[in-house]
Amino acid sequence: MHLANLKRQGKIRAWHDRAIEAGTEWAVEIQQQLEAAQVILLLISPRFMASDYCYGLEMQQAMQRHEAGTARVIPIILKPVDWKDTPFSKLQVLPRDARPITQWRDRDEAFLDVVQGIRRALELLQRWEKK
Image (cartoon, rainbow, N blue to C red; front, top):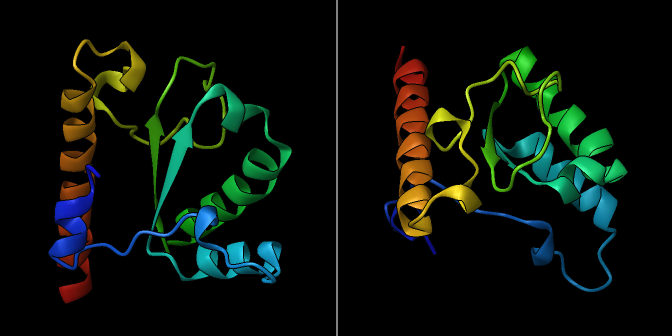
């Protein structure tokens, strides 16, 4: 919902694993999407950190692409969780001040901060592509 304007403007095409159709090999589809993405959002929560698949496979692949310069990884802190000293802890996170979205008094304001950060990252990527 909060990314709707970026979608309408053609700046992003969102994908998530709930878009995988019945009968599709989900691991293959996820890998293909991770390989094709220019921007990868990591939605950081205790569940993400506890998931061997999300943390151990998806995040590791995303970070490899980030370090190779073939994708931009943007961690978004949804809930309070210990994420220090993780592979993505060296990256600037959203929302500002690394304050988890659930700790904002107005969550819409938190999501607006996230969307504005994503928009800035997209604009920067577009400038780099033009060079």
